[in-house]
Image 1 (cartoon, rainbow, N blue to C red):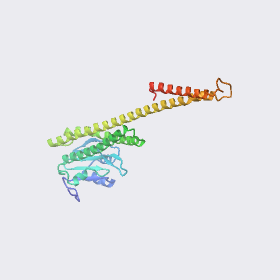
Image 2: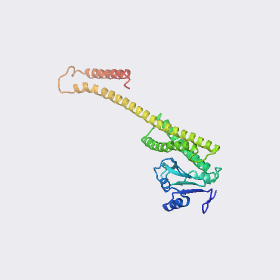
Image 3: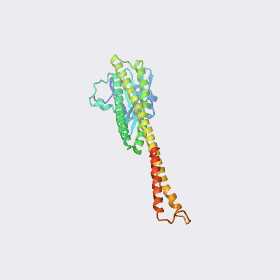
Image 4: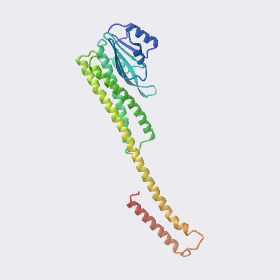
Length: 296
């Protein structure tokens, strides 16, 4: 694979973060629809399929990492015609490395297959990120048994849910786009190409299921932790209540006999030990009742 100085039929036109002047060149040279070209640079553009005369515009979104190591999805536009295949994106296409590195057997003259191969790399990239997320959730879930989950884990959960939601918002419309491609009205497909589209659909649906499963897992972990925390709090409150009762009972008798009034047996030497015995007996009875009631 090599870079050409000028365009020739059968080449792959790759545009990365094109300027307005470069968009002008693409529009003028290849008779493209300017509105669709600008849509490719819209951060919120969703996957869809458009056909203008003999040109098909395929919008998808691919996952990538920012400089802050944050996972995001970015729009990518494929333009297919009888003599042309163009890709336009805001950032470097991760799938490009597989093509430049010679890891894939392809030809730019096989335009439909080239687009499907790029889509395949995008789907694999989603699978990789979702698999990494699944392992992170399982690690946090394993710490739940030891009650070692921290506030940072819940912050991670919020970030993971945001990532998964963004993946879902990209993968679900992509499925609809792939189904429309299978009809063959937007892009001619050979039997081998049909098989590739079917595999892409299957992988895409598996990624969607994995996202939903991970989000459900996060919800279950959060609910379990809330239940465990509530149960621990109830046990602590019961224990503190029992401890308060046990501490309060001796104070009733000691405070009463500490008042400056005449009370029975207050001058008797043996009464101090008798009072202590009564207090200890009451404490033991209270502890026995608490254990039978499973207060602690």
